[in-house]
Amino acid sequence: MATTYEIVQGIQQAVANAYDGAENLIPDVTKLDLKRSKGDPILDSRQGEMDGFGIKINKNVLMITYHTECTVRYIHRMGGVEKYQNETEQQMANIVKYLKGEYKRLVGSNLRLTQVGEVDTLIQPVSKLRTSVQAYGFYRIGGIPAGEEQGQVKTTPERMKSLYTSLKEEKIEKTLKFKPFWR
Image (spheres, rainbow, N blue to C red):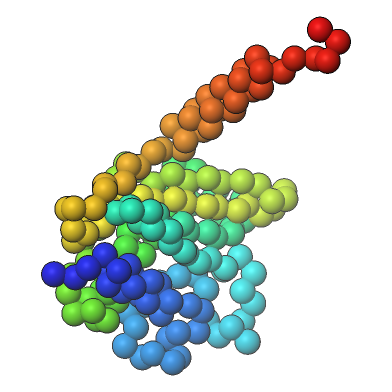
């Protein structure tokens, strides 16, 4: 049975093998099907075709972040925001599939990832023509020994609510402890 350190190290190496240009150096790398890997980076324009992903690990929770840019016209041609969110969720599923396959190739054992909640997608306009898209997915990592503390996954509204309440409590404590010198 692998230790937590070995599991995290395998995941980090799988992500490191997905850098831009890895297909040329490592021929066995499973195609990740990112927009940036299509075409020749020197001869073709990559405008509107930049994307990438990263990970963060907290206890036994893996957070995958995916970022891309696209035109507003592309979202409208696709059929609206809902269909574009479905495409983003599919891209997140492709990233998870890649991580599992690359982990198995590197370590020799399976990586178990269980999705927690839905994929959060944030679409923000950069200008009248371009948008920035960020997606966040949370996954429980299987295989971490049971003796370790289990991480809790909070959704974005829960995190914001806890942040606001902590700031409110801090402000109340400061105002109650403050005594002006003239009293």
